[in-house]
Image (cartoon, rainbow, N blue to C red; front, side, top):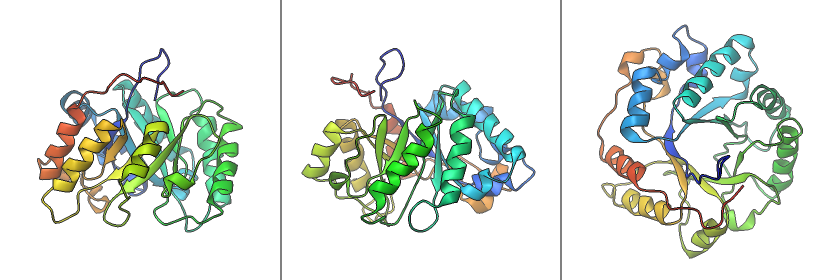
Length: 271
C-alpha cells in the first residue's frame, strides 16, 4: 500500500475479537476490547502495530446510533495512534445478502472522510463458489458509489483464479488450521504482482512454531501484510476487561519479531 505522500507501508497487526459482545454490554468499547490508552501504547510503541482488524456482524452495526458512536470512538482512537482500523464483516453463509449491502452503505457513508478506516466487506471463512467474483463486484459497486477512494480487502482463497479489475483492492487469505493456503511458487508469483494480506495468521500446529517462523519469513520476503490472531482474550471474556493480558507465548514472540522486520521500499508503488 502507498499512503498519500508516496510512503510505502505494509500492514502488520493483530485481530481484536469481541466487538459484537462488547457492543451489547455497558463497558466502554475501548476498555472492553483492551484498546485503552495503555494497551494502545504497548501495541504501537512496544510492538510496532500498524493495523488492528476488528471483526463484527452486520446486525451489530445496523442496531442503531449508540453502537455507531462507540465505533467512531474506536476508529478515532486508533487513527490518533497512527493505526488503521480494518473493519471486517463476518458474513452470513453463502454470498452477500441485502444486510451485507445495507451495512456497507452505512459504513461507507460514515467513514468516507476517515482515512484511518479500511474495509474488509466479506470476511468469509468457507469457499464462496463460482458466483463469488460477480457478487464481489456488486459489493464493490455498493461501497464505491459512496466512498470512491476506499481501500477494500476481499477474500481470494483461490488467489490465482480471482483477478478482479478493481483499483485499490487487496486480496485476503486465512492462515489457520481450518483454512491453510498453499504457500508455493504459484502463490509467490501472485503475491509479487498483487497486494495480499493474511487477514488471520494463527499458529495452531504441533510443530512448536516452526511453520509460523517459516511463514513470517515468506511474508517478509514478499511484502505481504498480516494480522495475527491471538493477541487478546476470546469473546467470552469481554465482560471482564481486566482479564485481557499480553502473554509472551511462543507465537507472540514470532509475531513481535515479524513486526520488527523492516519494510523494503516499494519498487512499483500500488495506488
